[in-house]
Amino acid sequence: MFRNVAELIELAESKKCKISSIMIEQEMDVTGRTREEVIAFMDRNLKVMEEAVQRGITEDVKSHSGLTGGDGKLLQTYIKTGRSLSGELMLDAVSKAMATNEVNAAMGTICATPTAGSAGVVPGTLFALKEKLNPTREQMIEYLFAAGAFGFVVANNASISGAAGGCQAEVGSATGMAAAAIVELAGGTPAQSAEAMAIALKNMLGLVCDPVAGLVEVPCVKRNAMGASNAIVAADMALAGIVSRIPCDEVIDAMYKIGQTMPSALRETALGGLAATPTGRELEAKIFGIPLNEK
Amino acid sequence: MKYKSVFDIIGPIMIGPSSSHTAGAARIGRVARHLFGRKPEYAKISFYGSFAKTYRGHGTDVAIVGGILDYDTFDTRIVDALTIAKQEGIKISMTAEDAVTDHPNTARVIIGDENDKIEVVGISIGGGKIEITELNGFSLRLSGNHPALLIVHNDKYGAIAGVANILAKHEINIGHMEVSRKEKGKEALMVIEIDQNADEIIIDELSSLPIVQQVVKIHD
Image (tube, rainbow over all chains, first blue to last red; front, top):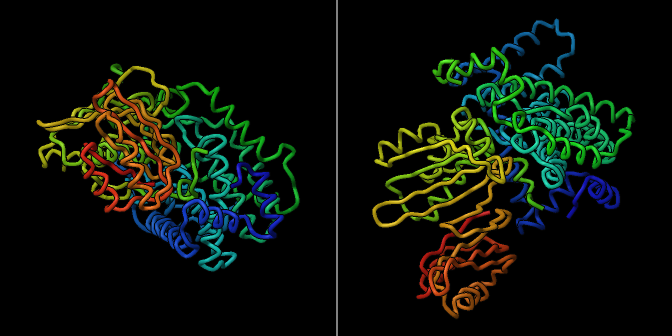
């Protein structure tokens, strides 16, 4: 069983196989399930992700609070005008990441990757890349195993909980996971996947969890958007041969330590950050029907 | 290693909006329901830490009640759980506590009816994964990493051997086990983490042991 990214890369290199293969084999080992069962289980998750993305970019999704919904769809319309500056692939990923989280905020069905609040980054990037790289169903499933392998390391060595480690542990982890999986899908090496993860996560360090009114909506939906774009850029950098000066495992460890020293007001308590801005407080009062002076 | 499966990371399939505050809460409620073994007449729920501050926004309240109604994380009925509980005549009370707990996402659930009640403390550690830290005043360290059996039994010789024999007969390996009691000779609790999920036949056999009062299994 690999315990960190260095061991994961070493395993993949020594066996001359993909990171996703290492993850699939470990899953079979740990659970006693067959390859077919493990693949079928992930296929089910992929189906849920696909449905959430589709729903978010085609339907008029609205959360109960009214704070979020419809932005993923809005961006799709904008892409079709052909005037986008950051490019179709990038905005498609951003739109699909937001779509997933808008469905999540509306209490729709999603697949946590690694959490619900950060569920948009991995599927958003995958379904955007699908248009460009035309992966097989099998390769799309492998994408999720590759992302899962890196998430597995983060969850066991740091945290994937906003309440424990801030948003860097949620959207930050998801961004790193997606960056690493993109590299594999695009034909990069396991080592390049680790570089992409390190580059992506470094740029999410310190990100606090400060949801307005305690809802997984503002700023979560747009943080998933930026996570998706960050992941694609980090993957491109790694594929170009750029390396992180700080090794991936040390970046993960830094994330953990930052999370531990983060004040509780900035760890999913809705007491600080954007939640504590005048507008944040006003929205909270409106949603829950509590006069502001009683807060 | 707190997380052992890739499906702890890519998964679970769930109703939004929060894996820790919605899916995790549903799982804590559901474990309480399974431990109680039937539909309760009342549920008293206390939230601590981040749960206490944000439970309404995250749907932690509907989710934990959904769990008490035996709904899984992806059951769309979770959204209407409070209404359904009311229709089914379950009295629900909820409080947000100020007390500081070891983990920021902690919930205490007391469910019962006129005959019996149980008290469970659960923590939601991220991505929908939970741990049960207390049952009826017994401290536990149920990692949630493995399928597990919780066996309430009489604190008497032969209890452990009886249980172990049945597991051995069915070739179930024990990964971790602990036994605790509140008072000598009274009620005791065995927490057994096993490597495979136990079939109903095994649960029935364990339940039929005279020394055993109750068996609850927790799936992976």
